[in-house]
Length: 110
Image (tube, rainbow, N blue to C red; front, side):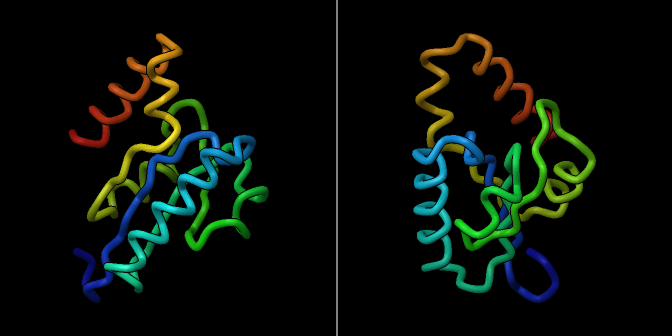
């Protein structure tokens, strides 16, 4: 955990910039995390962070197709990485998303 006992949590969000279902899922995830860790430093990513920043109680950074430097920075600092929400549903309908998320999770792990 970070030095002040406030966990740093990174949420791998779905398409929260343009999909209100994914945004609602993220909002619920953050609310549940805040119940246990009210002072957590939560970061998530979006294709258009300026569209999402006011909708969630978290730091929203720029997402790109591949992990960018800012994402990698926050991922390295994270005590916990959360993955889920709408992306899990999309994995069953898009063959490209399964290897994409597998690669992202492999990079995060190692």
